[in-house]
Structure formats: structure tokens, C-alpha cells
Image 1 (cartoon, rainbow, N blue to C red):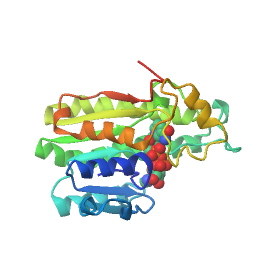
Image 2 (image 1 turned 120 degrees about the vertical axis):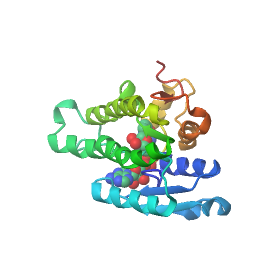
Image 3 (image 1 turned 60 degrees about the vertical axis):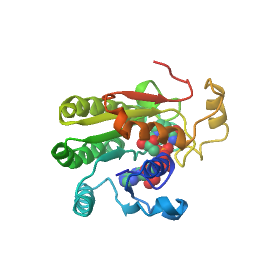
Amino acid sequence: MVTGAASGIGFATGVELLKAGHTVYFTDRNPTDLARIAAPLRERAHAVILDLKHLADMRAATKDILARHGSIDILVNNAGITIKGADGKPQGFLDATEEQFFEIMRINSLALMQMTQLVLPGMMQKRWGRIVNVASLAGRSKSIVSGPLYMMSKASVLGLTRATAAEMGPHGITCNAVAPGRILSAMTENAAPGVNDGYAAQIPVRRIGDPIEVASGIAYLCGEHAGFTNGAVIDINGGFFMS
Ligand SMILES: NC(=O)c1ccc[n+]([C@@H]2O[C@H](COP(=O)([O-])OP(=O)(O)OC[C@H]3O[C@@H](n4cnc5c(N)ncnc54)[C@H](O)[C@@H]3O)[C@@H](O)[C@H]2O)c1
């Protein structure tokens, strides 16, 4: 089950998991165009409208998948949003409001915790599970463009990842995070002129990333042989930030 899978990193992740042989539920608040997936793989692809604003909808979606398939073995918490200032530019710290704080934390943090809570009982019963959370370079280090609320929300994803990994490891469940740097997706392709080029000039590989380059890292973490990787953060940023 992949959240925010209609586009960008989430869609690419769904396709990578199909290639690995899994049945994949592409969930998103927007419809997912499964026709973009090659025919043989498409047979194992399902699209579900799921808005992570509503716990009842998350419950219904996971219940439905469990009823059809018996288990949800892999959860990729990918969906995320940014908050811009009124002029569309990165927001200053003093402009952040309580309303915006709750809006971004609901989707970028709380929904990940709730989705994780919904899949864990089944994984614990099966004694196998893989959870991958999509954090961000903005939560590992800093963001030039995304603003304080996004940085706060993505830092919380790293804490959620470690909490889940520590408590669930004994149950055969791993939880890891990826922290992408600048990736070309719907979230970034409409940036102000020069922003992506300016970013690329500061990245050692001199370009911004492609969703597939994050999706392949996520797919690795979902694999059987990633079982000893737990509570880790994989930085996928072209060398912009090295820890
Ligand atoms: N693109 C980047 O440079 C970049 C960098 C670091 C981290 N990320 C993170 O990667 C993840 C994927 O982003 P992307 O770059 O592929 O952008 P994207 O905009 O292409 O994909 C995000 C998806 O999340 C969905 N979504 C948003 N709110 C939702 C909600 N309430 N319920 C369900 N779905 C919802 C959107 O419809 C969209 O399909 C996000 O968590 C983002 O914060 C992106």
C-alpha cells in the first residue's frame, strides 16, 4: 500500500513494487491513472481514492484491502504537502500560523502515524512487515525553499521512523525512511524560474533527481534482504547533504 501514489515518487514506487512482484494499492486523494503502467504489471495494480485528512477513510481503505488480500505486508507512507507563503514564496518563520501548522502536520506526520497503526496489527500477526516513510532533506538538515513548517513536519517523520523501528523490530517488522533532496515532481516542477537550476548548481552531481531514483531506494527497503536495515535513513540527494 502506497500513499500519495497518483504522481511523482509515490507512483514510481508503486511501479517498482509491481516489478518486484507485489500486488500494489496506489492510494491518493486524486485518481491514479493506472493506464500509465505496462499491461502485465497493471494486472496487480489497484487504485483507491484515499484522502489522508480523514482517519475514517484510512480505516475503511485498509479494512477493504485486508478483506480482499488477508494482509498488508508493505506500507509506504509517501504522501506529503508543502505550505507556501501568501505570495507563493518560501514562508518566513514569523509568518507560520497555528492553522497551517495543523494542516501540514496532519498530512506529513499524523497521517503516517495513523496509517502505521492501522497496518501494524496484521503485520505483527504475520511476524513480517516493511514500512518506509518518505521524509526529506528538509527534515535531516535544512531546506532552502520549503519553509519552517515543512522542515518541522519532516523532522517528525524521522522520529516516527525510529519509534516504529525500535518497538516493532522484535515482531519482524522493519521501519526505515528515505530523505530525498530536490526531485522533479508535481511538487517542484512549477517552482519559480531559476529555482531548480539554482538548486542543481549546488548539488555535486549537478542536477536534481528523478522520482525513480527515490522509488528504487524505497523498493530496496521493502525487500526481504533489507531485513537487517531498521530505523535507518537513506539520503537520496546527489550529495547535497552528506552526514
Ligand atoms: N519532490 C521533492 O523535491 C521532494 C523532496 C523531499 C521529499 N519529498 C517528499 O516526497 C513525497 C512525495 O512527493 P512528490 O515529490 O512525489 O510530490 P507529488 O506532489 O508529485 O506527490 C505527492 C502526492 O501526495 C498526494 N497527497 C497530498 N495530500 C494528500 C492527502 N491529503 N491525501 C492523500 N494524498 C495526498 C498528492 O495528491 C500527490 O499525488 C512527499 O512526502 C514529499 O514531501 C519530495
